[in-house]
Length: 285
Image (cartoon, rainbow, N blue to C red; front, side, top):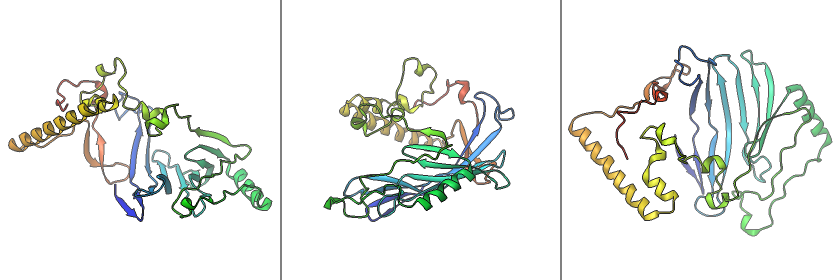
């Protein structure tokens, strides 16, 4: 992953991701779904890192490929533009291995996504152009602090649903205390949650067991700082010991190899994690 700065913005380059849909615990030779996907990420740009109101946009083309069927989904994450009309908008389509369009996808990645038949979508777009001016266009803010093009417009259009569309996804409401938790979603807030009974099934190297993070979440900042320092010293000592014994660190559940679908170097799952056999895991905390 590569980062670069542009004025007051920071952008993150896209990279390739791979996933395979297998039944948990089943061997790769006997997959339940027998489907494998690769996809690219859009460019993520964080605006006003140095000064101004912090906001992000995603833009660029995302390709999701089903290597088992040859189907492909191509999504265009539209850039914000000068007045923010296209901010967060997505438009794309799904095609089969013969490049025949099967469905059109549209919406906003911050709100909802819909799909519809390609012919119906094209017809709706033509009618929209003939109607001309029915849609409300966001007006640029009159606030002098928001005069620069790099400021996010305050008013944004919502997704206008075309009749006959099918809802694919809609964002969930954020929890009441979201503003006090960095505007996280319910999923993000609970991602590091350690519920009763989970510790018996988690690997001892799971990040949810990190004591410094747990102290920080509990508001015990001084204890979190001390634990973080202790863990760093423990990692340095373990690294020196391996260097002394000329022992290389070996990953447990992944290994570096060649992606069978893209032919590029990748980290591949070596199996065994869901056996829950963690007796010889290193003590890293």
